[in-house]
Each structure stands twice: as structure tokens, then as C-alpha cells.
Amino acid sequence: MPNEHISLDDIYRNPVAEGSIFRAVKMMAEEARFINEQAKLGYIDLTEKPTTIAMRQFKQNRIAIVPPEEMQEEQADEVDEALIPAEESPAEEA
Image (tube, rainbow, N blue to C red; front, top):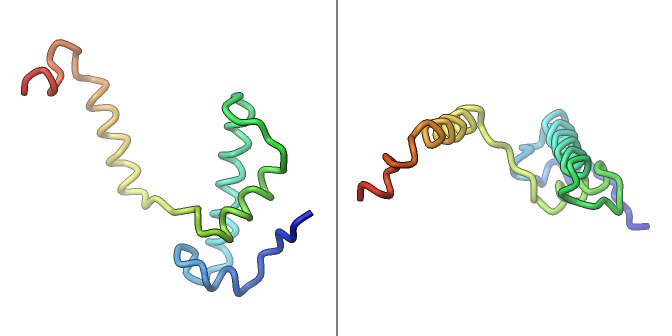
């Protein structure tokens, strides 16, 4: 079993966590919840615990934080696209 220990040095080196232990724990917890939800929905098969996977992804700098304003913009774009009727889609106008 590989060592999935997260040291303070791992947190300090992570550019997204910016040396914040709270931010690092929050990032890993949210990622673990996302992985668990994907497994419950049947999109992925887990061979390890979601927390173990999230910790490994953190150590490999594969977890990012999406600022709330960017998330709201992305959601607004999705809503705008969903509200455009098929016959009036921008692709057909061009």
C-alpha cells in the first residue's frame, strides 16, 4: 500500500492551496465527495477510497479551485444555451 500521507511541505508546495491547511483539507474533501458521487451514479468504479484518490490528486497538483464568479458565469452560459430554441441557435445564424 503506497504512502498517501500529506505533509505540511506538500501543502506549502501546492500552488492552489497557497500554504493554507484549511484550503488543502477543503479541496481534498470536496474532491473526495465528487469522486464518491460519481461512483454512486455509476460513472466510475472505485478500487480505492475516495479520500485516498483525492489525497493523491492533491499531491500531484491535479485539484484546482474554481472561483465562485467563474462558476456562476459558466452556469449562466449553460442556462442561456438551454433557453435558446433549436431553430434560433447561434450556429445556424452564422
